[in-house]
Image (cartoon, rainbow, N blue to C red):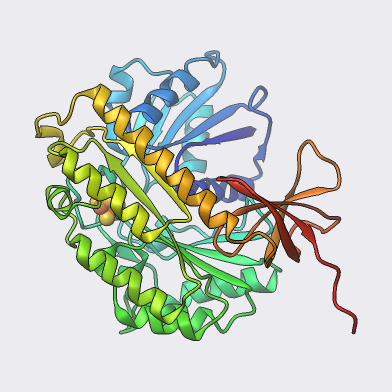
Length: 431
Ligand code: SF4
């Protein structure tokens, strides 16, 4: 039996796909190309309506001889409705049921009928099967929590991932130790609200977890996603005191207007958000931020939108993911009246993206002539002798080098565009 996993969505989904792969390989199944695999597993994303539609068109192209499993967030949110939509699907596997995937495939092979497995689990062993199949030998993802209790008014995640559950500290540390011993260069701690993590068996909170992990021989420790409403000042101290915690934080603001934040049920104000950014920068002037923004949320006025643009200018984000608001099932905002006309919302999105591109260009030009550490992540697919790397703040850096993937290089920046940097490796200094 062979399988192919198609992953849509965020790093959390990438990590879930790694877990699925590990579980199936442990049962003797192997991966195959999309065109040949016996079973196609679609690990789906439900955060916006458009990617969800992509999933239906993706599965529609496979012949009936192939078994199709829709897993993940769309599976969890749509469940039986997927069959009613006549989507090409043999089994629906929710976000907490991955651990059963091998049995489900056996059931399908034995002629089992289409069915849904979408119950929520409370057991970490089920949510986080030991993922030893890794999609990268450089970056290791480590789940530390799952689910969310915040119920931001636009967000489907609490309905697809369930309530917050925190993984025990000992298990997180063990997994990070294994990654460090295997030569991984960075780990990324994953969860919907990583900065709300608490050790279920003890008193330690997220800053303490970071302090513990920073003792490991890992050059870069990252974490995603932090919720501004859960910020603790101790996090700033721990980061400032440990140089291997990357000076980059994904810190989703969603809007620059306190009025819209309230409508979104985000429990912080623009002023509080900015105060946290300033606290990080006071302690670590080199600290960089990235963010998510929703444009066209119901009730967003022209003035609210201008406040979002001014937040971009003030923080000078390294990168921004921006989306047009998309009503999602089960959420409070889905019942709100539509906001600005669709054309105006599109114009707002373009204006935001144009401004952010100019900010990124300015940020990147500041690096011209400077030397930075770059992690070689992959060989350039088209240019031989060239590597694509990433800086500590997640900037893409292209540079001529014979470095192996996973090696760090000191690179002098010689070119800067809005989305990437160019550089040349500096020779190692004489002993
Ligand atoms: S914090 Fe808000 S946006 Fe993030 S997962 Fe929870 S409900 Fe969704």
